Amino acid sequence: MTGPVTGPVTGPVTGPVTERGLRARVTQEVAEVIATRRVGAYQHITLVAPGVAELARPGQFVALAVGGESSGTLLRRSFSIHKVSPSGTYGGTVEIVVSAVGAGTRWIVDRAPHDTIDVVGPLGKAFPLPTDPVACVLVGGGYGSAPLFWLAGELRERGCHVEMVLGAASEDRLFGVVEARRSCDGVTVTTDDGSAGQQGWVSDVLPDIIDRTKAGVVYGCGPMGMLESITRVADDHGAVAQVAVEESMACGIGVCMTCVMPVVGSDGRTRMVRSCVEGPVFRGDRVRWDAFDGGHARVPDDAVGAPKVGGH
Amino acid sequence: MVDLSVDLGGGHRLPNPLMTASGCAANGKELHRFFDVSDLGAFVTKSVMADPRSGRGTPRMAETPSGMLNSIGLQGPGIEAFVDEDLPWLQSVGARVLPSIAGSSSTEYAHVAATLRASRAFDAVVGVEVNISCPNVANRGLVFACDPMASAKVIALVREQLPRDVPVFAKLSPDVTDITAIAAACVKAGADGLTMINTLLGMVIDTDRMRPQLGGVTGGLSGPGIRPVAVRAIWQVRQAMFEGRIPTVPIIGVGGVRTGRDALEMVAAGASAIQVGTVVFNDPSAPVRVLRELCELLEAKGYDHFTDAVAVAHGR
Image 1: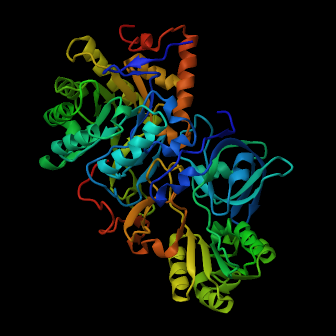
Image 2: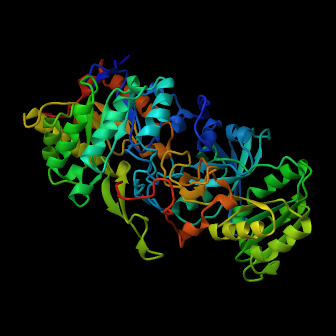
């Protein structure tokens, strides 16, 4: 494989909102690892990927191939982009935060400096930014906080007051507390076990922060259960939730149809939409949280084309 | 320079034998960001049925050794939206299209084929692939492709709906006792060619939760792990054609092709065209890479024409 290869921008798209992501440019490049370091329970990896670095916006993600050209692990692993430096010493770089949970992510975490990884990106829709300088609360669960520091910088440049809430099961599963203090106007930390910050969940502290800052937008990234509770709290306190979801994906580029979830469209109808191209950022109140249960997302009965018969 | 062109029937000479595989490439826009989809011999679209379908709940996939299991449930926009939006877009970028059609009854297949024929972008269609690996509602959900009679009925009805210069390809399932019997039934019913193979039915148990990993319980196994099954199926059917048990028609090989070598292997077994499917998830530009690699291999082996390599492994 030779990189970077930059695909052409697709022709005029007249379809529904679901097609918008397909006009954005994307590249595939063989990226060199130039730095990798342990941060608590996670690995923070810096890749030389100038094509991705130039195009990416906060909230977008990259899909990494695992194990080289003849690897038996075929499916890419997707990671939200923590940071980009379009014109660094090494050319443009992209940073990601990885949690080694299986053989594929372990392979990525084990890469040493100068090893290469095949990267496709940037993928998905970015976080929408407010046009007015409204107060925002950014909520990250575990390493889900990775894209939020970059987002915080962009929001503050627009004059927004930015506060961050970082939550995790325990202190070693928090990511970016120091960086949060540097990049935000206020930081609140929660852990389930009380090993850092306030004991409890992000949803325990979020209502007061929204009320105190009169926040208009709550951005969230983390496990689905947390995103659901962020959405509920934001709704109750007059803020809009924008959440970046985590769904398992086979391709990340919109062709495999495995990462779907039920989301209400602008016409009020629920569809099973691809979180890789129509997300990963969705308005929280558009997600059909009622359909999620213990790792399953069922098709709501009122969804467009809800099943009658099977077939694979 | 090797002549890569191939005629799969109907007088539509394709510039090369490489195609996407149905359900692994959506309907073109996504992959067009990585390569020009008109560079392919043909673009095979995701199986389309009469009405919009949401598909199944999630999880819809499980990774397997050198492959994956999927249970999508034929999510799609329905044939009306397909002919209004997807097919005209493919035509606008100059793609040659091999639409894949599906149904839960033989009349649904015929309806989908008729709607396709009546559409304004039908000129872009160089053939129709019939996905017969769907449950037949009229026969307690038994998959059409597992029953020679049901397969033949679908193919005959679809054949009737389409002009003679548009070849019909039956996509066969390997999950049968004798694939040559199904192949023979399809060709006798009017199939102008065969696509082999569809996924194999498989299952994965999530041992953390001690329950089936897929929301749909079972799913289709695909990827390089199934390639030897595809090569075997192509070989057996091509052998039956040599022996006169099945009239000779072109075979489109599909199942785990990752490299030019893999494509050449299927060609030597009897395939006149090659589809690249699941490997696209690993490498979005795989179809054009495989084409380039295949071309280099043919050149290194001294072939002037791609078609000279088809089925050469037989009798050696």
